[in-house]
Length: 87
Image (cartoon, rainbow, N blue to C red):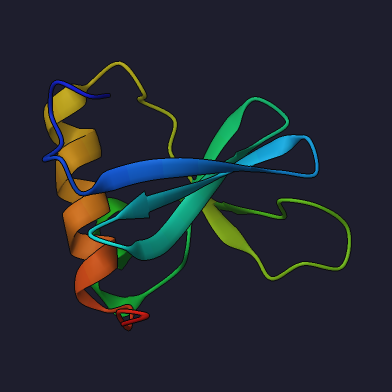
């Protein structure tokens, strides 16, 4: 993923899973070997399937095509446009 994202990306290990950040914005994570992103208006156009990251959590979108780097970049940027920056 490093070759398509700018230097402001990152991930954080959390309880056996990984939280994913772009420009300091938490936009998704890797849960049980699945790439999931938060559901926002801006990423509904990708028609992704809703899934639960873990029991009791809010639904998130499953990113199926993890080998398509350009699509991953578009989904990430579009998702983050609708999420608040924590700064």
